[in-house]
Length: 132
Image (cartoon, rainbow, N blue to C red; front, side, top):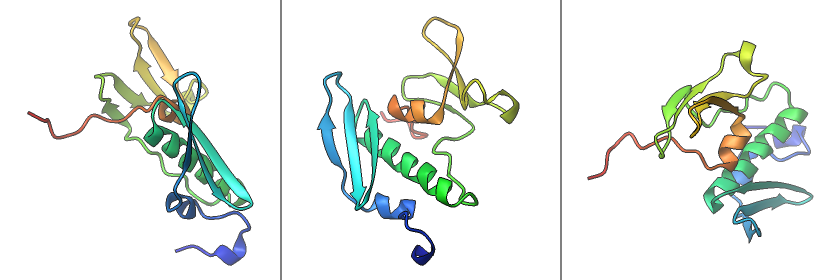
């Protein structure tokens, strides 16, 4: 598992089992706050579930700052179509100054987003099972 004696910062899995406190923001977004005293992580998204995912992703990034060998898992596949039909593809490391993923926006132009932006927008791959 992980060695809690070697780090003051909680392992990201410890944040996963805590219930977030949600706040609805004026812009229609939600804020999820997960606290393990004295540490807390905050995420904002279009949905409560998305806000929780942002907070958990930030917990993993923070843990990595304490433990550089910790590998933060990418919550997205390299290529996928989201629930709204937008096709996303992971950029190679040589292009990641633009973002983590490329997609074609509503204007028909290719655009870029970081994983954190995608989580904030609550981007999710479409289900592999079609519903009738």
